[in-house]
Length: 242
Ligand SMILES: NC(=O)c1ccc[n+]([C@@H]2O[C@H](COP(=O)([O-])OP(=O)(O)OC[C@H]3O[C@@H](n4cnc5c(N)ncnc54)[C@H](OP(=O)(O)O)[C@@H]3O)[C@@H](O)[C@H]2O)c1
Image (cartoon, rainbow, N blue to C red; front, top):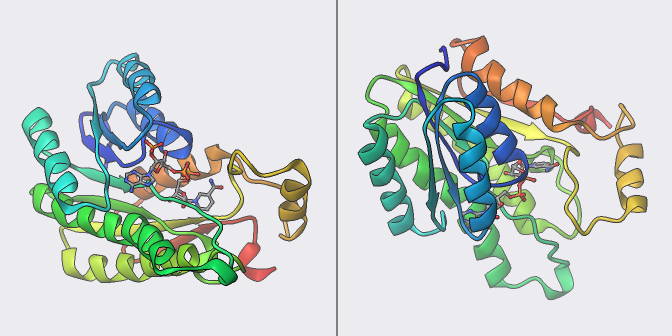
C-alpha cells in the first residue's frame, strides 16, 4: 500500500511513539486522524506539526476503553475524511501493579485500555475500510515473556497478540492485521537512569532501541509488503531470546 493520499488513524497520537508515527506517516503524504485522552495541549501541537507536511490533521479526544467514545471517534473520521485506510493502535497504559496490592480495578484498567480499546477500534475501522486496509496493533515482548509487577499489563499485551491473529482471520483478505512488539524503546518518564541501564544490560543488543526502529517497522508493514497478516514483529533488541 502506498501512503500518499490515504487516511490513517493513530490512537494515542499526541505524544511519544504515537506522535512520531503520526508525523512519519504525514511526511509520506497520508492524512492523519489521531486520538488523545488527556494530552490536549500536545494534541494541538501535533495537529500543527502534521499540517506542516501539507496533509490534513484531526485530533479527537476519546477514552478508548469506552465503546461510546470509540463510536464517536469513528464517526468523526468518517465525517471528516469519508474513508479510512490504516489504523495504528498505539494507545496504552503501563502501570506498575505489584502482586501484594493488585486488585480488580488494576486488571480492568489495563485490559480495558490495552486490549478492549484496540478491539473496539479495529471493530469500527474494519467497517470503515471499505476498500481494504491495514491494522497495526502494539503488543510488547512482555506479552510472550511476562515480567514481575506488571501482571495485567503483560496479560493485556499477550491478548493483543491473540487479537491480532483472530482479527487477521476475520478481516482477510481485505484487511491485513499485524502487531509490533517493542522492547525497550522510550522509557517511562519516572524510570531512573540506573533502571534504564539495567534494562539495556538484560538484552542481547545491550542498548535501548530508538523510536525510529518502530517508525521504520510501521512503514514496512504499510508500504513494504501486502503479504503479511496475523504476524507479530518483535523489535526488541533480542529480549525474546535473552
Ligand atoms: N515505549 C516503549 O519503549 C514501549 C515498549 C513496549 C511496548 N510499547 C507499546 O507501544 C505503544 C506506544 O508506546 P508509548 O510509550 O508511546 O505509549 P504511552 O506513552 O505509554 O501511551 C500512549 C498514549 O496512550 C494514551 N492512552 C492511555 N490510556 C488511554 C485510554 N484509556 N484511552 C485513550 N488513550 C489512552 C495516552 O494518551 P493521553 O496522553 O492523551 O492521555 C498516552 O499518551 C504502547 O502500546 C506501548 O504499550 C512501548
